[in-house]
Length: 126
Image (cartoon, rainbow, N blue to C red):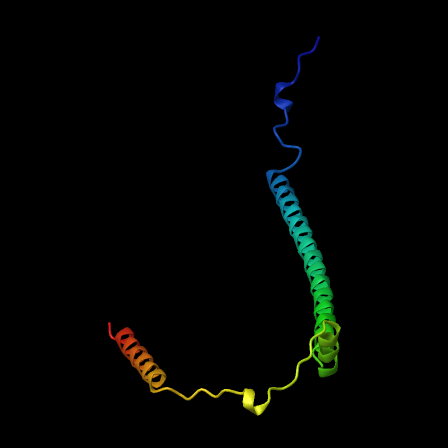
């Protein structure tokens, strides 16, 4: 029986270390790219949904503003007042009371302005 030739051993690797490292790097880059693509797609969809919601709210605002403007017309106001049994007219001249401007109110305004001026000056100085 013949012995095994021990000098004929092969001490090489099937795949080189550089090839394994490169393939692992490619896999990590690919997984990172797919994760980023997924996040960007989700955020893009969220933006589309929010824009759609904004457009519907804007249309609703325009409709409500048109309704409000229609209710503010003088004819509509009179119609609503009559519906509730109210009759409103302008005041007669003898019903109007004019208040004279008092000097105390002018003094209070001047005092307030002086306080504001002094507060501004005190804020400027450290």
